[in-house]
Image (cartoon, rainbow, N blue to C red; front, side, top):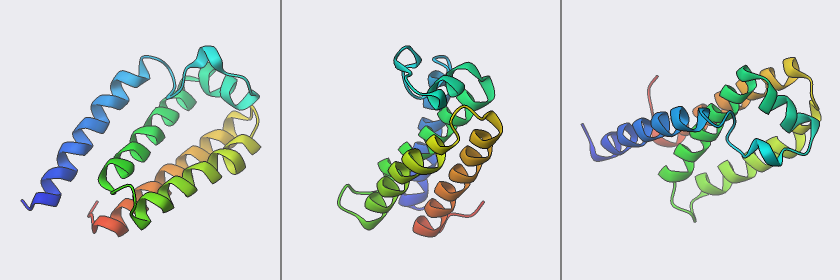
Length: 121
């Protein structure tokens, strides 16, 4: 196993552990500070909370793998911010819309990782 594959395996295990621990708090953010319809829907819908935790773990994995100054880090950060402001928040409290958007974004983040690190499913 190459060094990068070992690092990826270790980070994937860390992300899975983080996701499991974070799920105990329902979402990747503090639900006591939820202010929008979107945030309330995430906090009050177990499926959305789990998707939020999975998305945050996937994003964190990408961020941890990429040096801060890399194109990947910039691309992942811009993608995440644009997705939250645009697509996620545009759903408001619509659980179906949020579920679709989360699944699509998680898939996009995973594809970005595969392309950047030549990962195989």
